[in-house]
Each structure stands twice: as structure tokens, then as C-alpha cells.
Length: 298
Ligand SMILES: C[S@@+](CC[C@H](N)C(=O)[O-])C[C@H]1O[C@@H](n2cnc3c(N)ncnc32)[C@H](O)[C@@H]1O
Ligand SMILES: CC(C)=CCC/C(C)=C/COP(=O)(O)OP(=O)(O)O
Ligand SMILES: [Mg+2]
Image (cartoon, rainbow, N blue to C red; front, side, top):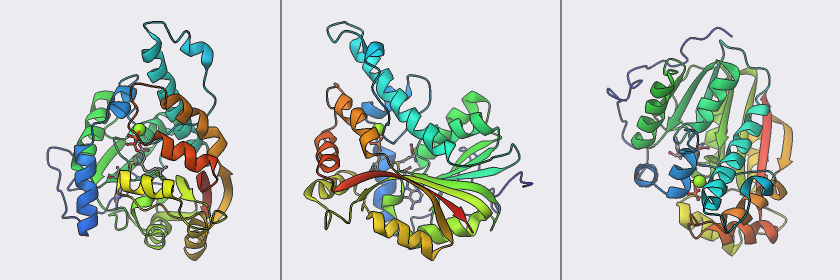
């Protein structure tokens, strides 16, 4: 794919001249404010470990040898590094599912946060990565990080609704949502991914979803929704909305067992936010699942 710039509108490309569109709905205004104000140590201190700032959770086994003795004065620092390693492992798994990406391809990160996954994608594939977020603070942060790394010509965040992006039709080699699809209607979301993706392109999401086998969203799922002002969808809704929008699943991976060690470890740290028990309980009672879905645009 030949692509230097997917965007039909480049006006808001640099933070200095960033054009901030009015929110499409009052809800999106709330979410923009939420992320503009967010500065939780559990995110900033983890990002400070190596400069990759994530707003998603972790997967994989805890490396107890890396943590050492809990009585040691360096234990908390090691614990933070370990949580961060698990969060980056989550992003690596998402990137593993993007398929063959060439240097001249363009990828789209829908709901890019502070841009950690975008940087990792560029570092892995050498390609251009375009991200959208509702939060001007997050877009500024991500663009500042890209400048610091000298990759601002390849990695760019902008303030934009993921349901109506300025990207050209059929040009993206791959696109993803990393824990950002619980803020939007899935039919609208997948219609937009389907529009921007090339035929044969790849879509990947990692998300928390409620489990139809449980019946309805549990009290823990409701707690998570209230905590983040989001609206968690069911697994069934994901698969149905993909099918409706020419996205054919190639892999559906239940990451619930893989994310539980992250939560158990996080619950013991000084950086707890109070939402840890809701995740642990809902994963354990089967009402909630941590899922990766990779789909082909057909
Ligand atoms: C939990 S954070 C995930 C950030 C990032 N994907 C990561 O893994 O670090 C959710 C993100 O979704 C974004 N978001 C929510 N609704 C959006 C929308 N309608 N359009 C664009 N971004 C949106 C928020 O601004 C925020 O950046
Ligand atoms: C899996 C689900 C349902 C996720 C909801 C979306 C969300 C808010 C993710 C984490 O962001 P964060 O990294 O800012 O959260 P925290 O501060 O808890 O680490
Ligand atoms: Mg976090």
C-alpha cells in the first residue's frame, strides 16, 4: 500500500496548531473531560518506567524473581516495573495480530490514549501510525512523546471522534481498539473501521465484555461502567456488529486467565485505585471476559 498520509484533513496535525472539534454528543464531551483530567499514578508512574504510556491492562504471568523480597526497599519500584511489563505485553499481543505490516503502510489506533501502543507499533513495523482520542490533553501528550522520540513524522495523535475519522476510505492496512470500544456504539464503530480499512486489512480489539452466558451485566460490570463512565458491551454484540460490517473474525482469544495475575498483583500495590476487586470478582464469577478479537476486512 502506498501511503504517506491517510488523512484528508491535515489541519490538526501538530499540537501547537491543534484544531479541537466540538464533541459530537454531550456524552463525548464528558469523556473528553474525563481523560483531560486523568492523572492517576497507576498510569503515569508505570509510563515513566520507559516512556510508553498505556491506558490498558496487563497479561501474562508475574515474574516473581524480578520482584524479589517484599520487605526490600526497592520492592515497590520493581512491582511498578512488573505491572508495566505486563501492560506492554498486552500491547505486543495486539500487534502480533495485525498481520504483515510494511513500512509504507498506515495503521489507525482508535482511542489512542497517551499513545503507548502507537509508539510500539511504529517501533515494530517502521510504519506510519495515526491515532484519535477525544482528549486534547492526551493528543498533546502523545505528540510530545513522538517529538521526544524523533518519530513525529510517523506517529501522530489528533482530537477526533473514532466514529467519524478524516481518514481516506479503504487505505489503512490495519486498525485497532485497545480498551476503547466501550465508549461507542459498536455498529457505528465497525462501520467506520470497515470504511477506512483496505480489503484484506486487519482489525484487532482487546476489550472487556460481559458474558452472555452469565445472563446480563453483573453488579461488578455495572461498577466498572460507573467508575470509567463507559458502557461495556457483551461478547455477542461484538461478534454481531463485526458480522454486520464485513469484519470476519480470524481469532477470538479469551485473555481472562492471562489478565488475572496482573490484577492480583496490582491489588497488592500502593497504586490501587479501588476498581481492582470489581475486575477480579467479575472475571472469577464468569460475568466478565477479557477478549482479543482479530478480524479480516472482507
Ligand atoms: C482506556 S483509554 C485506552 C487508550 C489506549 N488505547 C491505550 O491502550 O493506552 C480509552 C481511550 O478511548 C478514547 N475514546 C473514547 N471514546 C472515543 C471516541 N468516540 N473517539 C475517539 N476516542 C475515544 C479516549 O479518549 C481514550 O483515549
Ligand atoms: C477492560 C475495560 C472494561 C476497560 C475500560 C476502559 C478503561 C478505562 C481502561 C483502562 O484505562 P486506565 O489504564 O486509565 O485505567 P486505570 O487507571 O484503572 O489503570
Ligand atoms: Mg492503567
